Length: 339
Image 1 (cartoon, rainbow, N blue to C red):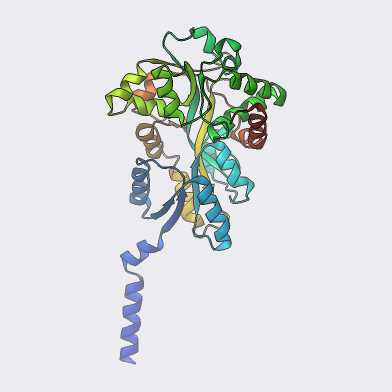
Image 2 (tube, rainbow, N blue to C red):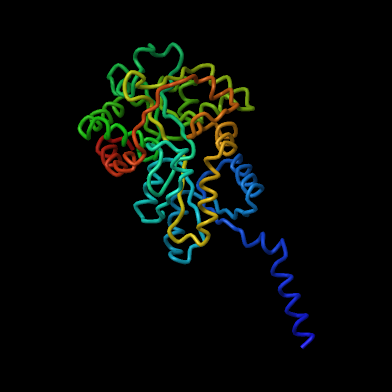
């Protein structure tokens, strides 16, 4: 009997050891965000909560396919990615669980959240043009990009890319399908070359004189401004950044966000993590580390590149509307030849 009691006490002692308890507090994160600064976010969350983050990073489509194939046995608690269209794709697959969180609802503006996924940072899709290549009045709005006077002057990435699909979705939401398709056809007619590359490639192509005008998300511009490469900083001196539609709906805003999966095995930890992402410290990480704007109003940031862009009017279209028109946006781009 003595041996049995002693053995039981050892087992109980081990099971209550701090190290083992800490191991039980785990969050499994599937992330399509590929930013080195996010590691600081995760480490800070662990320091504050004791919850260890185990993450798998890959492309959005690969992660979504993995979650689907894992089914009810998926270890994933949270899915994070960039772009409303991609988050909408996850929602359409029925992956997200609805969440009621007073913290998330209080700190994230209503237009930047849905019932089951939430935005944690924003980036604007702006117009850039080469100094002296066009007149400022010729590129004040997204509509201007379809004007024949820009024929042969526009560079673009693929029309199938989520950043362009989200912009098109916003145009459909504001103006209807007919005008959106007319716009797409006008932009295609103004291409300097077939779409290729990413946003950074479009910015550098404008600076190099390959074309005169392009669209780009702001965090790419801020990254070039902060680059350690002199040639990239020099390229930024050759272009002008335009906030589109400042007399209308405002600049199109896209987001980075995520949600908790229905099959999440660690739901309490998952909600804590989502709530952490709207804390002041996490919001500063998004801004200062990765050149994204906080979604929480009043958070003080320290990013000279973002501050150099000045204040602007942002489109307040609900992110749910971007999701609603995502499929229609692709159909319109395909018909317009925006490949």
